[in-house]
Image 1 (cartoon, helix red, strand yellow):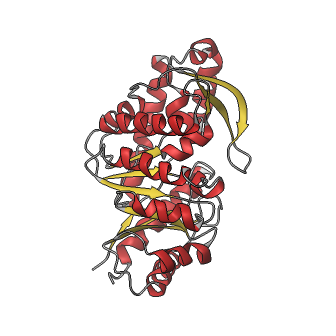
Image 2 (cartoon, rainbow, N blue to C red):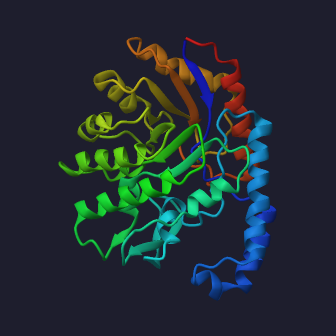
Image 3 (cartoon, rainbow, N blue to C red):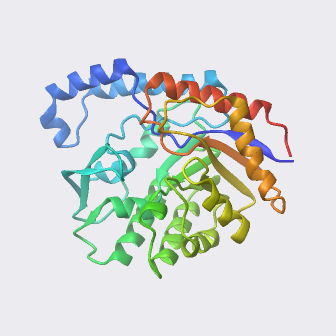
Length: 327
């Protein structure tokens, strides 16, 4: 029987009160923030917002609860942006949309930092961690230290593995890898990306989901991703359901799967019935694959949405998983 688990890729929108309060606090402490130091007031504001976001997921009834990644102003680039060996420079477009992040330029050795682990340690009731995948993080960054693409990707994988190893106990780790779709790796690089993902997965004792979105992975990188020792691959069935279905039908997938069946960038809220129809459509079209677990999730991060719409989508995901009939 297939278990349906309601979850998200994290990176939630900040509550409105927190946006106002943090904007004011950061405006008064700009020099400290450039140096990477957050005052007690800023940390406390983030802490209250984190508690609010976690409580809202529990209220919705999600099976996997994330910390929310509210401090991730640079989105998936965040774990590098706060590192001592990284300089943040100019403003760069975040993939192909109207969001921007500070370019992280790696100027020294990527040793252990512990920033994401500290966020998780401060978060009661969280049972799912979120990290950028090593390939996407390396593509979002600029390297001025390793000076070799292969060495840099390996270093980013080792860095993320060290960060993940310090995590408190969780049930699931979502590795977000949109760059596998938007900037698909070339021959040779696709195999290295799979090895880097392996390094992160091997560092944790929990289920690991590599979630991809904004389209479908090309066939060869997908085949190499299938070689990675992870528990599930995530597919964006909002942006491109046909090509993602083709990959699963042609090459198979892991025993479990993550299905992006809720639009993380559209304010239209899906009903639980619509979500279950999308899950059933995938399962009906791959009858040879009997999934152990289906992670029902948004296709992308949720920070694009207004808070009320993001929360409504949490409710819909949880309600869908609670009513889905196991296959």
